[in-house]
Amino acid sequence: MYPSLLHESPHPDETIVLGKRFRLPDSRRIGTYLAHEGYQGFLKASQMTPEQIIDEVKASNLRGRGGAGFPTGLKWSFVPRQSPKPKYIVVNGDESEPGTCKDRVLIQYDPHQLIEGILIAGRAVDAHRGWIYIRGEYRYLIDIMDEAIAEAYARGWLGKNIQGTGFDFDLSTHTGAGAYECGEESALLESLEGKRGVPRIRPPFPAVSGAFQCPTVLNNVETFAAVPSIMRMGGQAWAALGIPKAGGTKFTCLTGHVNRTGVYELALGFPVRKMIEDVGGGIRGGKKLKAMIPGGSSCPILTGEEAWELNMDYDSMAKAKTMLGSGGVVLMDEDTDMVKAALRIIRFYQHESCGWCIPCREGTLWLKKLLTRLDEGVGTVKDIDLVGDLADNMLGRTFCPLGDAAAMPTMSIVRKFRHEFEAKLGRKTVSMAGLSQLVSITG
Amino acid sequence: MTFSPELEKRFAEMAAKYPEGRQKACLIPMLMYAQDEVGHMTEELKEEVAKRLNISVLEVNEVVGYYTMMRKKRMGETHLQICTNISCLLWDGDQLWERACQKLGIGHNEVTADGKISLEEVECIGACSWAPAIQVNYDFQHHVTPEQLDKLIDDLRKA
Ligand SMILES: Cc1cc2nc3c(=O)[nH]c(=O)nc-3n(C[C@H](O)[C@H](O)[C@H](O)COP(=O)(O)O)c2cc1C
Ligand code: SF4
Ligand code: FES
Image 1 (cartoon, rainbow over the protein chains, first blue to last red):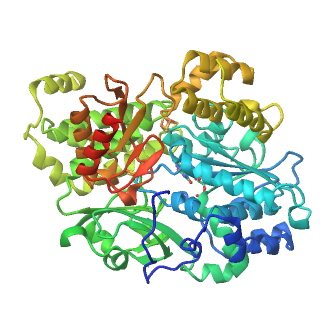
Image 2 (cartoon, rainbow over the protein chains, first blue to last red; image 1 turned 180 degrees about the vertical axis):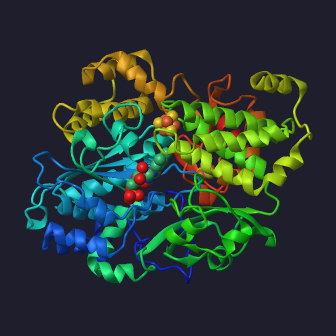
Image 3 (tube, each protein chain N blue to C red; image 1 turned 120 degrees about the vertical axis):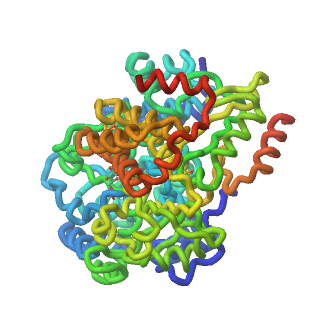
């Protein structure tokens, strides 16, 4: 009844760990979960001290899967457990970074895995309450999650004295309402409290003052979903699935001009070439790869030649001056119009800017106007330079990273594909009416 | 105005899910679930929700103004949302969008004269690996072809 998000069978080059129940019948149900090692990681964690749990997560080298890649065990260790305030767990299921559609798969096919990860985090930081914030567009996933939560309460995996361990935990979903900015952790917390999604001044970080001004662990859906396997397998074994410094597997969304688009579970450090040619079945129509965005549209772009030699991990991408990001890989073939791509990306960030700070609010607007002119063939060489300068001036000068997220892809596209911007100069494609409007805004 | 008993029950249970004294946290979920019933953010809806949370309508308006999914006016019986963001653009999502506009004779956030269909160009809806993607109310449709879009619109018109 829900659209299928999976290929019939996994690709042989995938490393299936978190996804191992996805293709079972009724994979969403607690019965299926319990029959396939479900909640065993929590039972193991309930025999451990909080320090031991955090050490295990540290040993796994798990890094945040929401985009920034912060080490998860370290983040959990920042929570002041002795604080008299209640501690909370918040799950970031806002998944709105263009190119990213993997948390959807994790919730649709295995919601109990997420609940178990939350319980283990709760044990580790002495939290007894959590919320799963899910973007409003994912209403059917909120329903799936609500059903799973109800099952867990009914079977004693949520609520008071869970399975006689003496541990209490309450959990519920919380809907978003259409705002990319609410994926940013502090804006999300504002939204959770019933306000507009405007980011908070940090420090204090959520670990010290998060939801309702109490210490809070806030992680991405995939990050929490990885924790049960870490507990079951042991941190070191889980780390060994990836590469040194980046443990485990990463859900990777192949999107754009590739034959077998889809969401795949790949070991960290997976070679880009293999990912595109083998897992993705090559570029559509046998064409050449012109460009790749490695992890959601806010990451700096790579040319095809650059991308081909890299591996899908944090350090490899950092060396190439981009980021692994959220796992949303956008592939563009040789026929892609890069000016159009740049314009579409900036239109998004302009729409989503919360308007709080001027460099972001005005910068994204100007970039959109300039790129529209350039795309329509009425721009000048000066406009191309101005795009670069404007983006450069936004970088690091905004209140939250959305400003950078808008500037970085724009700068990199203009720098790496400048010839395409130049080729469009003087090739007017708009009517006079549209033109006069454009002229008036740029004076 | 009155909400359905199911919604009232949902509201009643919601308050217990947030710390004591912080029930304003219910605001966004309450507005969204109420909108599902009422269709858009009417003055009555906002007043009703404000009353329950003991906050001013002004505070409600502030939030309603911020969130894209909170509808400021009545939309069509079926709300058609077409993604044109980057991954969908690479699979001609922009052409699907143009096609829908032309076929329906309406643009972004507009409603057909008979009130049956409204149209919205949306940002990434988390269906990038199954592009081009659309949402029909809350339902996802993946790998949408121009022919499928035509048929969908024809069927909705006849309904
Ligand atoms: C503008 C913006 C949007 C973001 N959107 C998301 C999102 O949709 N999902 C997510 O998990 N993290 C998102 N993040 C990152 C979060 O701020 C935060 O780093 C993350 O949720 C932490 O979890 P992790 O350590 O498990 O990755 C976003 C950040 C920014 C600046
Ligand atoms: S950078 Fe943009 S989104 Fe972030 S606070 Fe400033 S205006 Fe808002
Ligand atoms: S870009 Fe269209 S669903 Fe993500």
